[in-house]
Image 1 (cartoon, rainbow, N blue to C red):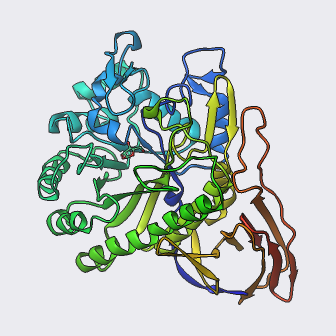
Image 2 (cartoon, protein in one colour; image 1 turned 30 degrees about the vertical axis):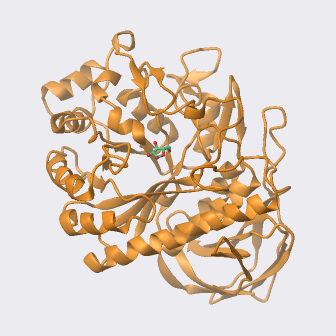
Length: 485
Ligand code: AHR
């Protein structure tokens, strides 16, 4: 039994928690989103099938161009006549040639087609302060300046709206192998030149810690707390560990449970960084932005190891919901999160092969969760059996409730592979008379392929409502979202 107090609103679940990330990595941008081959229907290069599918998710924000790629990216190479754009080698991801045909203008075109807000990550690792300042002026200045006029010459009269800007990526690693003291000084310097040309000030996101490196957080909070709006955090989950991440499709019930435990690590990691941030910023003015998260497995056999192409199963949807609930539970501090990555890379929403596209279980998770975006988190009280895997406690049932526009959304997942659960939602202080619900379930490794694209899809779940209570059976290994009014 779960008790939900409809009048006890305990925070706002920012819609930006449902953000996405698209890097110049493997077949994410090229092939997956952007094509130059007109045999695949597209609008200004953006695949119509992929854009139409992603629009259904109402993606609030999209991070680009990386990732590790961001600190190797020089924006000037990606503007102007495509035939004249210089080539480069994508040294981080497979050593393939990057022709820079997808650049700043193309990114904003994609954002416009998706009706999503841009989040651009700048180059600190190998770029100059001037390069970063000029990019901002090129994109956002409405007046008469050589850079703004160059943008006009390249086909864009009005400046774009840009709020979110990252000052480097993983600067402790691929973004420059820096110590936090050194990065703090660089942040101070670079951020001065991120000028506000538009109506809204640019929201500056500092390159944050790796997983549980709280020293990085401590040094940044101490040294640049007053200059940043947010600190980013990257934390991936696996089936095994970093050295052998497990297969995305071929796994047994142990592989299922170790992945659930890995997902639960997000709770511990966020708690550790929040504790440090709370000391320096008790009023939650500086946000924690988890701008890379998701399941990272071994690449699909036979694919380029640098392309990070993996399949996506029911397991990803279930552990994904566990993590989204952790974000909801920390919504005072977590303003944004960006799952890695949107297309064909890591835990993606869609997979493509030539002109074919399939929607993944994670796509359906995000589609089902839309009711929580920008909703008020509600107080929810429930008990769940817990089991221990690798010293980590994993709840059998994970739930979250929110309200918006006179509707209550409850999401719930059952992480057990064998035990169903009878759920009763006791909604206090609301007059609930009807419910609609969707469920996603199947075999533990159920997934969609180009040959069988509809193997796993949401179905209707029967929920009975009486006397302010909603009851239903939640099968083992499933996620469900219930809308009550
Ligand atoms: O998402 C893949 C990579 O993971 C990103 O480029 C990097 O930031 C992280 O290590």
